[in-house]
Amino acid sequence: MPLTELTIKALKPKEKLYRIADSGGLCLEVTPAGGKLWRWRYYYNGKPQMLALGRYPLVSLAEARDKRDEARKQQQIGKHPTREKKAEKLRRIAEGENTFERVAQQWLAVKGKELKDKYHKQCRTRLQQYVFPLIGALPITEITIPDVVRVVEKTGQRGTIETAKRVKQMTSQIFRYAAQRGLCLHNPASDLRDILPTVREKHHACIHPKELPALMKAIQAYSGDHLTIAVMKLLALTFVRTGELIGAKWSEINWKSAEWHIPAERMKMKRPHVVPLSRQAITILNVLQPVTGHRDHIFHSGASKSKHISNGVVLMALRRMGYQNRMTGHGFRSLASTILNEKGYPPDVIERQLAHEDSDKIRSAYNRADYLLERKKMMQDYADLLDKALQQI
Image 1 (tube, rainbow, N blue to C red):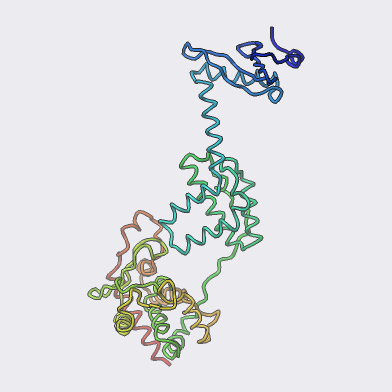
Image 2 (image 1 turned 90 degrees about the vertical axis):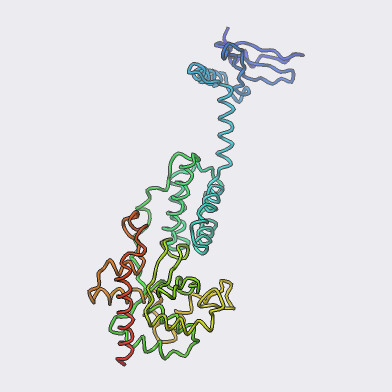
């Protein structure tokens, strides 16, 4: 006869454990200590089995019957209900251990092999400052779109819109990493385009091409140390990024072909880059070689842990020369691009020299030396143009 709530409450413990049947294999087990435990008796491959369904009254009679019915469905499709319960328990444990912070640390470890040290540390700092305090302890499977929105919006309030944008991108990459490894089913940060206000692109300060002669004269007359002067001249002659130049090593210079080969790990786009060196650039390097040629870095600095001069050296020098907020290290790239385009040089040749990312990812992997002959001529022409600009004043 099926059990009722009144019947269950009236059951008293005995010296030995005993069971009272309900229906469909469901029974209530009464222990000598007075505990009342739900059990479902079933057969799997002809062998008797027993599945625990919870303790009464935490699991009511109606809930116990629902659990029995659910287990019976599993049995009918060939699953082993007891094993399924254990597997589900392990899944819940795994989900609890796979918190967002733990998965993010795994992502950081993987990305650390691809990212520059500076950017890798920046990612870690942003996660620790803006993300982990809000969702770091949550299982990654339980994080929702509103959770991610809260992280991004608070980052924008505490930091800047640009920082919030970076946090959003990084969070999305972590969820994508987790989904690819079966740690979550979806990416709640995949489409949050409208939650941040649009920020106008901020361009690096750069003088007008007409001011080039005065700038070259100011660099020539600068009273600072010889390394700083050489850096500014080579920025003008090579128009690489400042970080790429100050980190340059003597081993990267091919004197025979007059080329500077920058390895992929030091390039923004993580692709090796060849910089043709004009006669003027070679002359500057020849002057520097007796000074730092016995060191790894061309612009060696004994006071720096990185063993090369600081990124701020160029900005400080330009400020002392009267170009604060008017010119930056990156400005030399913009200036060269503007002048060379105005002179009619092919845009593809200019873009290749600037090491800008090719829109065709496959093609770009093979194109690092493309237009090398054209670029060599262009770089020498530009160096001669800088010499003429110096002579104008």
